Image 1: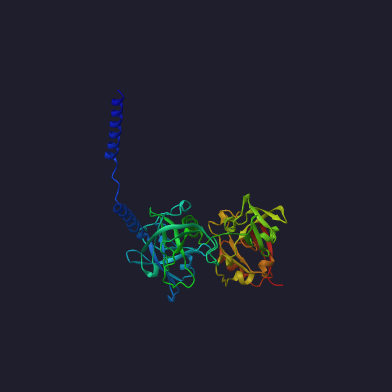
Image 2: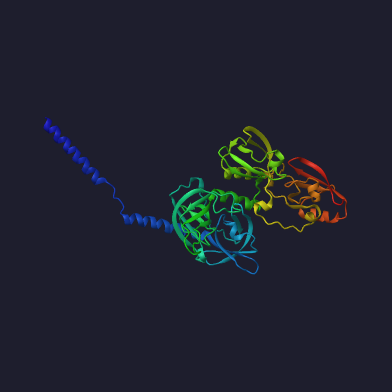
Length: 443
């Protein structure tokens, strides 16, 4: 009986082994695996190219033009690219995959994040590339870059995501808000502005920078490229389309990281930090209840704060914890890397640079509503009449001498008519509420 039982067990094991061998699925060969990967890259390139453009930007004479890349963000012709390609350009042209060329309008740029938006027109909708969630990007995943290096149109290179959250690169002067995706996919001159894609053909970033060792010949491969994450691109691009500019919060300090938090190295005169009572050597430990440790993250918190909003900053001063209420202001144009030139009557007469009220302003300035009318004060010249009357940056000018102001042209015409006046009564709306201020023009 034992012998029979033993024989049955052996037979059962043999049947199971035979069955598992008989039904094991066929494993793909190495060549089949490589072919599958190859086809994936080929398909991504083919489906993405129609949405990618070459960009030529320059002045009226096309002296020393800048070449770059970009891609369609929306079907109605909005293109995402780098600020450093199109900033200040008088003329911009984009080349499409079919060989046609279109004149582009410069919608807006943001030098701080190196993002720019262009707009082209035609009757048919444009093909677009979808944006991925860059928070889900993982180090080690495939990355595909498409652009126009050295004017070699639609060059496709592949690699992997080599790193995330890369900051403080090259001591860049103006690209302050850095959170780059690093890749070893080949990027070089002319690739800037093009997309960095995942294996689904989604944009995980805009190619922006390359890094090379000292004294590396210009044409040589860098080995490290950097892309602006798609989430930041989406946010900045959408704001540029809505407003033509980015409205950012401003505190007015220089800083560095220390073990306890953010050390204030200096406080600018008459800045929000100065007016709130913050001092040099204070250590910021909390911003609106959120602990802060990294200077980049803290800068982003300030930048994304509403202008006119009262924020709570907790600091350590001589080892003692203190709390301050700070009203966030708008970052001055010159600190945002924007050139400032103004030949307007309001600048010459009052020392005020103004702009029209935009639809999105009520979302950034806490004291404005959608029903407000007037012009926004962008810049105040020190010791000019407007400065002496304490008209703040970001204030909305509602009326002058009782006459309502609807737009910049109305303001200029009214000031021109009042050139010989001794003083003006200016109605404004700011974080202090609505006020009537007397501006003395002649002493």
